[in-house]
Image 1 (cartoon, rainbow, N blue to C red):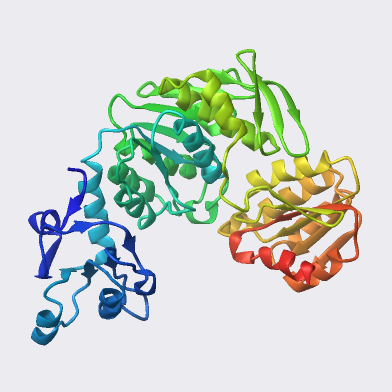
Image 2: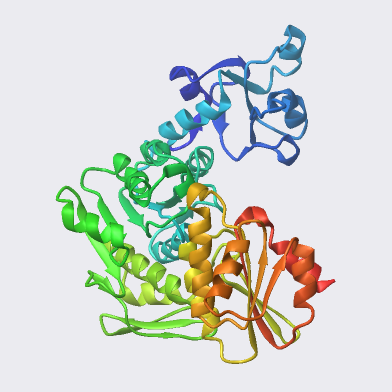
Length: 453
């Protein structure tokens, strides 16, 4: 049986049964009591200001079969009232879910592909999951559930799945090490090592160290698939003698290489092993995604024609180079997150658009610490290099983008203090292609909504 039962939580001393049935199953976990439906498990989280445990009654009213709560006072009268519902009390629900996920993971002898990287984790995950789905019933990380809460929730959502593609993110050293010990991947993919979170980690070398933590939980005979065009991964590949590595790339000689690359408006074409491939998103990053997926699919003995078909029909998580056309203006919605490494190829893609004005709306990139000015200036250099027609910046740090772009010859620069101001500028231009790119907290989706009004 692959279900996680209440009695396993009790047996492993994760929690104490207050009321209910040890034979009940932990499934369909909900973190919001208002979203609970019949048969669900309500997991109460404790925030800075309030403990969700106080809403367990509402969860039961909405149909929760099981409630997992922190240590709150539950009176004898309440125990009697809810005796037919299962209530488990734990020291800390955030720690309990980790231990629950470890028990659940041990029940599955299936391919588990762990994915990390500075940029492109989610689109890499989507591509690999689509390919793996050609042979297996695959479950993948939903959205960006890639942290200490998201990884356990992903594992606990497994049912009759025969493969798992799981994304792992981090802000500090040690975080991925814990996540991979929970997920126990059988295969790992590192998309790249860039500058995301460099303000927390201090150097790209430390970022590499943090990404390589994904190997801490990998099975001994597992394989690591890496982007050989990334300078730090390339160097590590040459120096490391411990791991069984598979490489992919465009520039450096690799096990899986793309040739004859053609980037078009809505697609990318390339050859691998004299076979024509087509992605349903444009830009070099999506070719790298495809190569990593070809490597994973080949290792899992998925026929190459099935891999090719999957890569042409990937379902991507939203706001990753999504195209939306409004009248005669095209918006490139790429504002889920941002870094120098992700902005650079987005600008290159914009530069290759043939018709109309090319407008880049760029905002602050977060968590860069002492490196913020330097990296925003590098973005400014890329704007000028790619001969973008109009640059619009929003945010305090983005001023360095505008400043350096201007120093490098960029004309037509607008420095905005708000998304509303940027949206008003954009309304002046028709027959344009507009790139919206910034860290998630800049809320660049608001620019598009204001533009439509």
